[in-house]
Length: 73
Image (cartoon, rainbow, N blue to C red; front, side, top):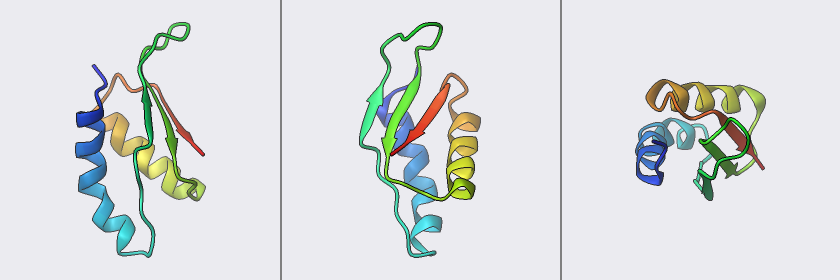
C-alpha cells in the first residue's frame, strides 16, 4: 500500500542529495484513490528537471513497487 509515511521516508533519505545541489523536494499531495487500473498515484511534487524526475521516480518505485505514477507540477 502506498502511504504518505512510506513516500515521505524515501524522500527524507534522498532530500540531502537534492539539497546539496541547491534544490529541494516536498510531498504535496498523495492520491491513492482508484483511477482505472491504478490505485497508487503520487501527485504534485515541485517542478524538477527530467533527470531529477526520473531519479526520484526510480528511487520511489524501487522502495514502493505499487507506486504507479509520479506526477511533477
